[in-house]
Length: 77
Image (cartoon, rainbow, N blue to C red; front, side):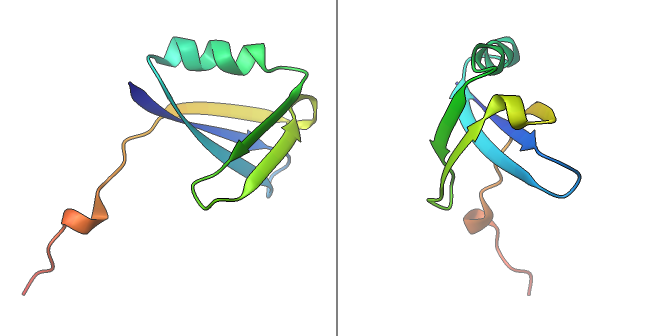
């Protein structure tokens, strides 16, 4: 499974991000297309619940996301 970041832009300053785990970019795109013109609900990584209607989104971006484990980095001396 790969992780993808989906960003829903409402205008130049307002957006919501959603992270999904799915097999490929093509399947992520198909998911976004299947949700077109309906309500989408999800809880983000901060535990905040979001509900939006895809019709009111101006731009949707999908990109593969590569998490960096910040806890494994050691500090320099």
